[in-house]
Structures are given as C-alpha cells and as structure tokens.
Image 1 (cartoon, helix red, strand yellow):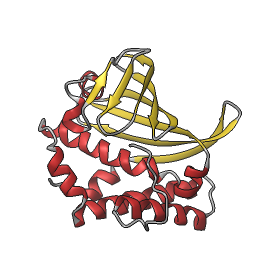
Image 2 (cartoon, one colour):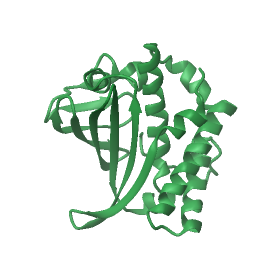
Image 3 (cartoon, helix red, strand yellow):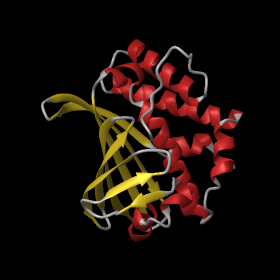
Image 4 (cartoon, helix red, strand yellow):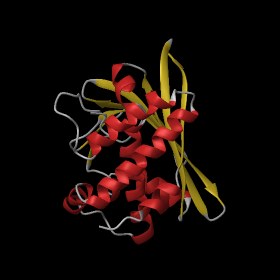
Length: 220
C-alpha cells in the first residue's frame, strides 16, 4: 500500500473552531479537500453501503434519516439529516461518548469538494488529546477515499493495517498530528498545550502510548 503522505496531507485544509453547543463548550475539527470526480459519484462513494467498505470500513444498518448505523469495530450512531447529494449528518457514538459528524459536498468546476466537521463537547478527553484524536483518523480515511476515487481499487484491510504499523504509516500519522497541532494553535490555544496534546495523540497512533495514559478512543 502506497500513500504519498506529503501530497495527501497537503491537499487537505484543516481548522479547529470553538463554540458552545447546548450551553456547553464545544469544538469542531474540520477537514476539506477536492476530489477528481463529480458530486454525484462522491456522494455515492460516501453514502452507499456497498462502496463505503472499499475505502473505509464495513457498515451495517439503515442509512436513512432516523436510521441506525454501525461501522465494524468502530463508531455507530443515528443519521440525523440527509439531503442528497450534498449533505448528511449523524451522531458518532464510540466508547460511551457521543459526538457529531456533518458532511457537505459541493461542485467546483470538474471536481467535488468534501467538507467534514466532527463536533465534540470539550471534556477531559479533548483536554488530554486535542483535535488530532479524531483528526488523524479522518486524515487516514479521506486519504483512502482519494486513493479509491482515483483508482477504483478497494482497500485491502489487512494490507492497510500492516501499513499503519510500518515506518511509512507511522510517519503519515506523525505528520498528520503536526498539521492538527498547527490548526489547534491557530484556533487560539497556547502552543505548549497544543504540543502536549498532539504528542500524546501521535504516540497513541504510532503504538507508543505509555501504558499508564488513557488512549484517545475516538473511533475515527
């Protein structure tokens, strides 16, 4: 499995925004990038139960508004909005925690832009790991989506798992974590705090987390 890390990460725009949700401090992790396909095809790739496993994970459930979904070995939740072919939103439930994802697609000339926001209430988990806890996982996912859209080849999950443990995979996750650290700082967080959080998250994704530290466990 080959991924040009510098290219894949460089084509993504990242941002972190802080606000209130239901009267509580919250933060949103945002990624956006262009894909070399049309909106209808990209929509199908990210919502079709048969195609999602080709670049992400097997999914079960009813992918309609009000329906429940479950990603194999990962998060599940409820579809809360869907307007084909431009927008869907869902809860993201993993490890007893609930957050929210919001995905929009838009045409730009002959390409399609995907924008994903992952929204979470700021709690101990966020204060320990920061935006990279979900951001690195989404960087991996949308890089896989780009590879699938470009080649039509489905991901081999065993090969992908092996790659994540390889030096190239670990370097990808380190670089992604550094991108998220920069986005965190740009949102107004103290640079030292942002670095502490990103260092913890990078160590987790690289398999180097000290045994006495809780892991991100965000599911993305």
